[in-house]
Length: 295
Image (cartoon, rainbow, N blue to C red):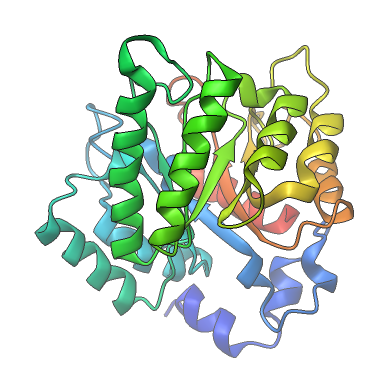
């Protein structure tokens, strides 16, 4: 008989040692449960969602399944939902999602809200206004589901327009009791100086940065960039990129990224993420296990 991982983590005094062995920096964490600082995004399992993989067959996932699945398989009770995985934002659907979260005693840490075709920094033809209105809808969804945070994107055009939009969205989110996040998303925010400027212009009231380990171009020193944004960061996308046939991470020094955030004063949640172009035939559960051990 296989003991459910959720039960094991809550009952075994060996849980922290088993999960936080090796290079983990959270093994010395003073929190009663080190898993309080680990989340997991549905992006990792995009291959199993029909909305992000039309060829998905067999072992499919839906957002309603995620809270229990993440807890039972990984001991993670802070899921992060990607907007692409919502089947609807109608009240009846959201009520079912809320029931699934409550049943699993899970807390939605963040919604990664993408706005395809709309850019909150693009002043042309009212494009930024359209993006702001769409992100407001995701903030409403987050508030209904009890999400702590909502991340909006993208900002690829005017920094000034992006800051204006961010201020509007932060004010709106604050009214809903939700914190709004700005992520380095292969856009203007992947220039750390500009990411910091947004943080300083908008302030810390219901606003902060989301630091993604992977979202920097090759011309940017990711480690120096993370050092710059760490003091303003409220959530980390602890992303991996590139594994060999032995499941050794080859993309960059993941452990160094975690150390930088800890040394920079980050005390929040590391939401585990994995991304490759396309959908490689990886064992994604094995990758999540690797990331847990290395956080």
